[in-house]
Every structure is written in C-alpha cells, then in structure tokens.
Image 1: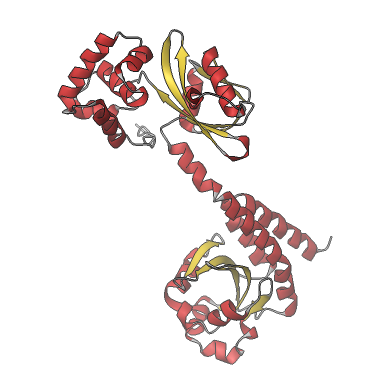
Image 2: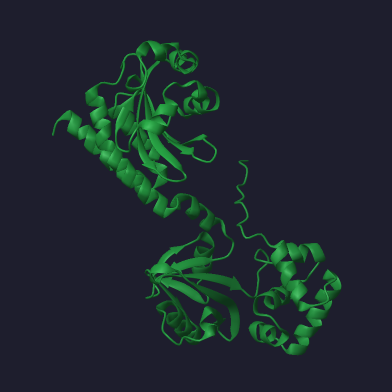
Length: 368
C-alpha cells in the first residue's frame, strides 16, 4: 500500500468512526486536513431559512479561527455565495474555481482573515443538500502548501461520499453522545431491555438500584426480580404478548412482604422497552426531599406523600407501604395541614412541581 493509500485508509476509518460517535469528528477532520495538506478543516451547515453558517465540528486546535471567520468575515468571502449555489454534491472545489488569485487576494476575507493567519486557499465540497440547508466541508491550506491542485481535489472527491454516509448515520442516531449524557443524569432509574429481558442500557440511577440487590438485580446481561408475579407481568409486557393486561404497564414490585417500587413500561420501536422505576419507601436522599424540607414533613409523611403521588388513593398506599388505611389517613391529614393542600390530586401536583428529574451533582471533598 502506498503512502497516499495508507493515508486515505486512515481517513476512511476515521470518518466511519465519526458516523458512529459524534465525539470522533475532530479526529476525522484532523485526518482529512492532513490528507489534503491543509492546516485545519471544519464541517459547516447553512440554514436556508436564516442564511447563517453554523460550525458543526472542527479540527482540535483551530476552532477559534473558524468562529472568527463565521462571525466577522464570511460576508466578505467572494467564494461563499457561489459555492452554495453552483457546486453540485460530491464535487470538490477550491477558491480559484470561482475567482482569480488576484481577486481573491484583494477580497476583504483574504486581507482581514486569511493573510493574517498565513492561509493561502480554501478547498471544500458539498456533502448534503436538503430543504433545510446545506452541509459542507471546508479545509484551509497555508502559504507553504499553496493553492490546491487537481490531485488534492481528487482526493477530497473520494472522501465526500464517505462523509455523506457518516452524516446520514449520525443524523439517524440523533447524536447519541448527547442523549446518553442526559440519560445518565436522570434521577429516575431507567433501563432499556429487549423482549428477552436483556439489559441493553441503564443509567447511573438504575446501576445504584440494581446494586442494592433488594427487589431487582442484574444477572449477567439480564434483569431479574424476586417477586414472581411482577416478573411474570414484566416478561409479558416486554415480550409484547397479546392480551397482556393493563397492569403490565405499571407493575408493583415486592421486596419480601412489602411493595417497594413501581415499574412503568414504555414500549419502544424494534421490540425494545424502557423501564422507569420509582421507589415507594423513600430514603433520606431520594425523591420528595424538596417537599419534605419545605413543609417540614417527617420521614413517614414523606413516604406517604410519595406513595399517594405514585400509586394514588389511601387503599393502594396502605398496601404499598404495609400500613393500615387508618394510619395512612392520619398521616395524610397531617400532610394536608402542613402543605395547605385539600385534595390528593393537589399533592400529586406538588410532588411533580418540586422534584428535579436530574441527579444531584457529585460532591468531591476538598484536599486537606
């Protein structure tokens, strides 16, 4: 394999990785810039509605230069408007395809932005064009590299279909890296399982709950639970068995003789299900902390408040917490007095309004 072929293979591998994980785009653009003998490269998107250019991704070191161009100099660029209207998808271009070197050197963009940074030429290509806008790659060559030649543009021609495929893969994935970060920050334990109860993903709150090994646990890659009735209901729900009753989508889970949590099942495409878990007997650092602190609720009042909000009604709350209905009514009367609420529906709204869905930030002790 020649040096050029080896470099192109590295570029292809880097682009493929970026299509799977958006965090790899800076690395891919570094490889592209190196292959094109350019100082840096970037993916840009022009919104048709606003005609604004937006920086999507750039090489590691020179993002600030791209931002400077977009903010202050793009309107002075004699190439930009013609690129977006005249270049077909999959064809590489450089500045001299549109203007002479003399005209380029006299332009405001060159004199105020390119020349001060020692840049000589812009090479790029349209990756994707749709009703919403245009996605393109641009790479900037410095003075020692000079203007892009035919061989360099031919290399970029070969990269453009790979970039189009990676952009399409990334759009379909809806930037999984961002969604994963949000998923992990939810206080609610959430698991994604397939029809055979195999855990495909779980957030940190679910890890914490499964680690307790109380009512639910992960055995290998599969979810299991001690409550046989709840396990059967969940298996029917995630398997999509016709005739599975409505309770299968809000499953009460026992730990011993007490009901400790409720599991809501949300069917997802491709035979997957999202499981949302909620403890009923809340510990001091679980849900309801804001309401408890704000209204001075005791630990038991707080548990009753959460159970009322989650399962609803005095009889269901009594069963969930292992208390008599009379005891629950007594706690409920005290909660009404402290919060000023007059109906159980008001308590549900109160809990939903006060509780944050996100994990509290981790606290790190200061060094001594």
